[in-house]
Structures are given as C-alpha cells and as structure tokens.
View 1 (cartoon, rainbow, N blue to C red):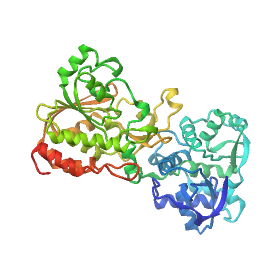
View 2: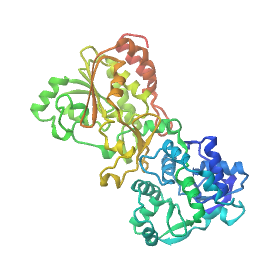
View 3: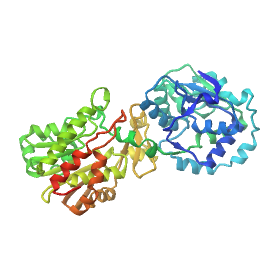
View 4: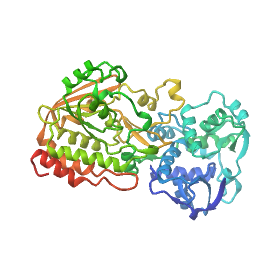
Length: 506
C-alpha cells in the first residue's frame, strides 16, 4: 500500500546503479512540478530507496517534506541489488533494444516546452500532486480492449520480474483508458487472469508530457562501477546450465563441426583421438560444475581444474569448496607439472570486464611451455540471437516470451540478465577482440568464428609480456570477492607457486 511519509523517513541506497546529470535532473524537476507523483517511490522495510532515487533528490531540492512510498517485503542485499536493476528497466515501457543513450536521443526529439505548456503547475499540497495515492481499481478486460495491438513483450517480462517480488505498480492512463505508462504491467495482468489493476488517470493535455517523463527520461547506468564485485561473483555457472558432455571449448579441434551432444568422448575411438590431439595433462580453467574435468578423468586424462566460484546447495557459491580447488590448483602449479593443453572453455562469456579477462589470459599463458597449446572458446557477437535481441532484432516467439535481458554500454557485446536470481553479465566477443585478448601473451594466435562461438588456438608464449603482467593478474584472481564480503586470500601462495614454476621472483 502506498503511504505519504516524511521525506526524511527514506534514504537512497549506496549502490543505486543509475547516475544522474544536471540536465536530466532539471527535466525531472519539471516533471514533478507539472505532473506530481504519478508513481510512488519504492522502498525496503527499513526505508532504503529501491526505485525513485532521482525523484527523492529532486523533491529535497524543491523543498518537499512529504513523498509517496510503497514498501516492499523484506529482501536480502543481493535481492535488493537485483530488483534495483529491474526497477530501472521495469518502470519505463522499454523494448529490449532501448538504452539510456537512444532514449536520451528520443527525448531530445520531443518538444518538451510545448508539452509542458499545456499543463499547469501542481500545488505540492494538493491531492493532484500525489495522484498515485488515489489509484483506482479498473477492469483488466476493459483496459486490454482499449489497448489492443500495443503490447510489448519485453516490458511484460520486466513486469513479471517485479511481480515475482510482490511489487505491484499502477499503470497510467488517459480518460479513454489508453495506457501512457505500464503497458507491460497490463499485459502481464491480463495473461495472469487478474480481474482488476490499479490505474492512475491523467488528462489528455498531460499525456505527451507524461509519456516523455515516464518512458523516456532514463538515467545512464553505472552498474560496472557500482556493482563491480557483485558482477564478478555472480559470474558462476548456473545449476540449470549443467550438461553431461564436453563443451565446445574442448571439442572444436577434434570435431570442429560437431555440437557438444554429437561427440561422445568416452567412446574408445573418440577418446583416442582426443588424447592424441590434446595429450594427457591438461588445465580446465573456469571449470564450472567440473563436468569436463570428471569426463576427461574418466578416459585417463590428468586434469587440473580451477573454479573460484564453485556452486553449492541452493544455487549459492560454496566458498570453502572453491578455495579448496584453488589451493589444489596452486599446489599443482608450484610442483612444476607440465601441461600439454590449457583450456578456457566458456568462462570468458561470464567475466564482466575486459581487464579481468586479460588477467585470465595471462595466468593461463604462464602455464604454457613452447609445446603447450591453449584452447579458448566463447560466445560470438556475430552469431548470437540473444545479443541481437538486445539490439532490436526480432526473434523466436518462445524466446521473446521470457526475455528480460538488456545491453550495457560500458563495453561492446555486453548484456545483463538473471534479475530473478543474481544479475549476471554475458560478454559476446568479436573475432578481433578474441584475437587481441590472447595475442599479447602468445606469438601465434589463430581465431575462427563458427557455430556461434569464437575459438582460439594459441601457441609459443611470449614470456616477457607474461612476466610484465603476471603479478597483477595473480593479485586479482587469487583474491576474488565472495558474496559474504570476504576474499579468496591466496595471493601470497599463488605468487610463490608461479615464481617457483617460472624460476623468477614475481
């Protein structure tokens, strides 16, 4: 239920991923002066703002003493961070391809002065200033009949995420029941068979300004700075992503045109081919559920896995198991054990930052001798339906029916999704990017783009470049963050291990 509370009763979250600029804050002030609060601010039980940071800031600037708030159920910090991102998409009627950049461009094409001139300023002490407090329950059937053909599947999917957390937001309509904001919320309500939904009504004269303010006034995301560590430890491979065969990164040399399910490495003839090609002493870096590690061990291959975010029960990271695997990896590195092949099979899809991926490339290159081959595989930017959907491409109806991922613009080929669980970045590489990632550390790098993956085979490590970057890579990778705010804490052990292996003082 929405309540009118003292503006001092709520506080902005420290992790809000939106960043504001003065011009858009001025536009937001115009919106509040002309329209008041059509939607409430959403807060956690303890008054932490989840949606409405900029409106709260501008309200303080305007000297308001009361604001309308809707309080959510109790949520963990991780859930609050996830829902914060979902709010930033779910409040506006956005499509998958809409970003703060193109929405700002669209807003610039609207004559705001003309739209605002039709609307008189609202008295902050009047009922009209807080219309979200007086929403009316309206027949969903009546509303759907008035908005036939206006549906936006992506907006519906974002509404589904919010409703999954028991967050109900009103929709905004003109007197003829045409939706100005909240078409996705109405679509979801209709599909779920709701009888009524809360509606805030505006006048026809307010429609243009309301559409611009509620759907196009989008602040830039700063997720890559505000959520830096969260995106790192949320990179773990999800339980639903388990498989029973080798991934593409382990197959593309021995079976370049085969899908994973089409090549059974446990068949004697396939096992023989695989071992003849890759040898019997390999590294599985970013081992996920250890599926490939276990399969390869079953055919007589000695595998050294590394997985810093090992999944345990309830889809949570098992830190103790993760650290145990890391310690065993460090011990093997220190022993000087020779590797015939090093695999980076799919982890690079989920590493959120270019610098982090570069460190992985360096650490793995340092394990290679002149006779070792490094094999890397990641999702391709050129063949990904998922990426193209965030860029506006039509896709299969089944995919559209659940899709709630969107692009981030801090780096090319980056999307973020999984808000209902733990927000996760996906990186889609171009062949040029993939080549550059490894070329610094290897004299020979061959990259092929095939079956929606970029594939790299690297040989002849560049020792000078590796040693230049290695200590920094170790200090990062062996001190990765965990959800409980702890760290891996194995930097000194790893430095000692790599130093001994390479015969240098790092």
